[in-house]
Image (cartoon, rainbow, N blue to C red; front, side, top):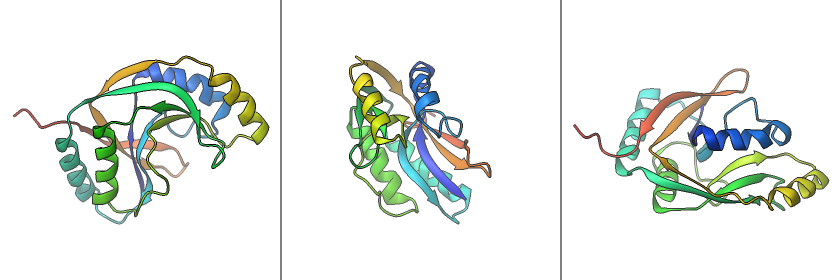
Length: 171
């Protein structure tokens, strides 16, 4: 089964991202706006073992403040446009632990926390869209207290398998 690990931001940020994704992201209908902690990976590991490891990872980190402060792009590597999140110890730690403790190998690219708003654009379209979007003054902050194990369905859409709350269980 193909899995991924993501953070879904607040509805407010998802609505803003979707206002662009509808036009500029062919994956719009497949998964809500998200920040990827671990790219899609295949594993034969039993789901219970996977969730056990993720529960351990979640307990190591406290809820944290997510700050989005600009629109950026991965060009010239890809014509992807995104809301850039400020990196912090919790995000970096979650990302690193997901790669170090779960199947799926090393990350393909350095970790740049972001929420994609446009991808697979032609060079001209990327230039036009990025040129206008980077002028946007985006200032968004929210508390993140959970992340999600998602899996891919037969129609290529993604759905939540389980949600993990950050921090130790107060019991």
